Image: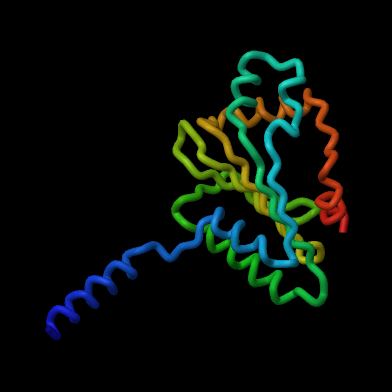
Length: 179
């Protein structure tokens, strides 16, 4: 009987240890929704008004691959410094996983940013934009779509420029970025 308990315990230990303990960006978004220091937005691609823009056929194809944007923003204040540092470290740790490949790093007057891709060379599952500023906070943008192509992002930006997206509904996010 002791052998049966030992075998069951051994199987359970191996089962639990074989599960990935790495947190995904999606799990991070869900967990952070409960944190009062975060603002969270889920924006459908229809909010960008791309269907009303005068787009070429290739731009329409790129625009149709975009589904939604998940935005998570943390406004830094003196009283939440420790939480800010912990959240920043957690995000960087998630993005260092082998699931993501870094496309670009930027240092701007607004802060540091990285653009990461998840997927293969032909199709992207998601694009992650992470920016932080030690005075203002951090922002994490998750761009989701179907069969997104890395070479198509320039076309997507051009399509967004042609749309009449006016940013309504993003006032809170704008206020966070302004400080």
